[in-house]
Image: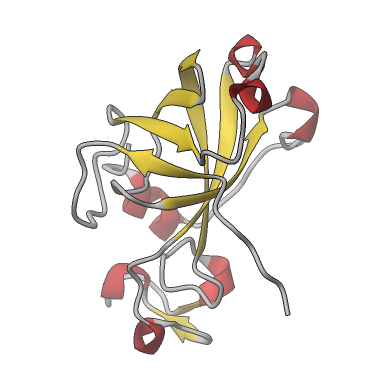
Length: 151
């Protein structure tokens, strides 16, 4: 058994789940009161951070453990849940690399976080070049098509 507790919460203008147009969304990740602001000291020295969060609105009955068509689009191939980034995942975890705008106290202001208002945040990690792929990234054409309006 693994037990996780949120370290913060997302605050932004997105109140409902939407698939696209996340690029200009500015979010505030506010740390829980149990974390002092020093937990974020110097994060603004990095240009980007990875935010790991919990898809808290996904109902247990909607969890996918096999394969499906991404966004239920029959024009795209049926692929395994671990071969796509949909929210209906077994552990309901999301991870996004965001642009850091600024830090104020126990709040981190970021751009491009694809999580709705009230989403529990499980971790924040600075993005370091050395953790990014060292070789060319490839992906199938359906993934490129799916992402064309995402940001």
